[in-house]
Image (cartoon, rainbow, N blue to C red; front, side, top):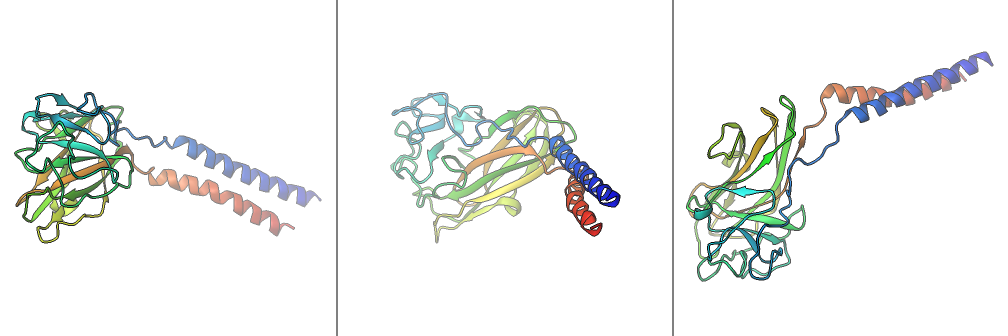
Amino acid sequence: MKNLSVGICNFYGTAAVGGLLAVFVFCAVPARANLVSNGSFTGCNGSLVGGCSASNFAIGTSSSGTVYNLTNWSLTNLNNLKCIAVQTGGTYTNNFLCGSGWTGGTTNLQMYVLPGASPNGGNYLMSDGDPLYSGTLYQTIAGLTIGKQYTLSFYQTAGQQKGNVGNSTDYWKVTMSSGAASAGTIYNTFGSTAQNGIAVTSASLTAIPWQQISYTFTASATSEVLNFLAVGQSGVPPYLFLDGVNLDLATPEPGTLSLLLVGLLAIPLARKHLSKRG
């Protein structure tokens, strides 16, 4: 009876320690929260004809000269920016992608083929990769810890504007800097034709499936600016589409995961120990 009681005590003692260890590790791992505000591109600080709705709003400078911005985001080179539009994927027509208050030739910015709804759902952003019209979309990210690793992810695809014919490979140039990339010190640079380039050919002009891109970097300051710039490599650059921008702490360090595993394994090992003792 004594041996049985000792076995039971050992079981519950080991299981309790393992359980407490697992709880401790879970509590020690910081909650993974998106540090980017409005990463799904909802809301703007102005309105066009029809109001600030997903079916009819854009950011940049309109034909009337009014400047519109996305909530929590800013733009460089507004005067050179043809149009960055936000739409609800798959629920709108291809006639006026930048809203009826914008002008873009006889087609008013139509795509040969729309990319369809993004995996993130809801709105997505589109930006011209032509250097004559492109501008950097940026946002200040606060609350970083110097030396900590963070993971940046987003969804992307591309589409060719009607009236343009030509092969092109475009990509999102992404930087973390001390200010807008055009003026601040750049800490990290991501994106290239090799890393996340999207090729569009005049022969197909078909929709390109959405793809998720992910980068990991180490914070160099407690506050950094996240910058997105559509870069056209050659030919007539297509429009790049962006959605689901997310920035959070990288996966917990291996040591923390090992500690968690030890805690979880302690419970079945304790049960096995008890069964051997009868």
